[in-house]
Every structure is written in structure tokens, then in C-alpha cells.
Length: 143
Picture (cartoon, rainbow, N blue to C red):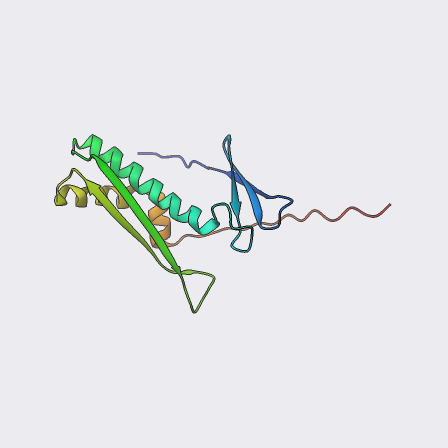
């Protein structure tokens, strides 16, 4: 089987409000605040947790339908704790799933499907190689 890589790109930019960011994904735009920003909008760490919740629930729902399991409701509670010795990382990320309408063994099978196929979970679980490039636009010369 041959697969081709798919690249997804979003754009984020600063705004005139310190710590307030505008993020664009396809044709969707939303506001995000830095931890040191206005603290009104969702923050980066929360977006990470939201991505894991969204991937887990959509994956579980899809597989429950494919397997004709009786899943009637699912909920993901996702949390992290910042590492007290290294604030540049999270000490742990916890995903708690509540699946209603399925037997325990079906729930476990759905979680195996999820952990075996979700790129967000697997990237967080295994770690990933991150590449950074920077392009500086020099200030305009005074006239």
C-alpha cells in the first residue's frame, strides 16, 4: 500500500492587543490568548488538549458506528500539569473517556482503535521531531 503525506497548515498572527493572537485554519478564524495575555480566549495549552479530545471522540464515534456498537454518548476530559521542575514541558497529559451504551470490552476495543490510529495521540505519546525556521524582515530604514 502506498500512502502520500498530507500537509496541513494554519496561520497565527499577533494583533494590536499584547498577548492576543488570531489563528486561521482553512476559512475558520479564532482568537487565542497567551498565558500572559488578556486571559479571555482559549490558550495554547487548552488548544492542545482540545485537539486530543476532538480526535479521541471523533475516532471512537466513527469506530463505534463501523462496529455497530451501541455507543450513545461519549465524553473526554483532558488535563495536563506543567512540570514544576521544567516549565517548558508538561509533566503529564491525562485523557479520561466516558463511553455510554457499550460494554467494557467494546469500550476497550474502541480505545485500541483510537490509540492505534490517532496522529495527535501518537505524536504526544511518542514525541515528535519539530522543525523551526525563522525569516526576519528587517525594519525599514528611516527616510
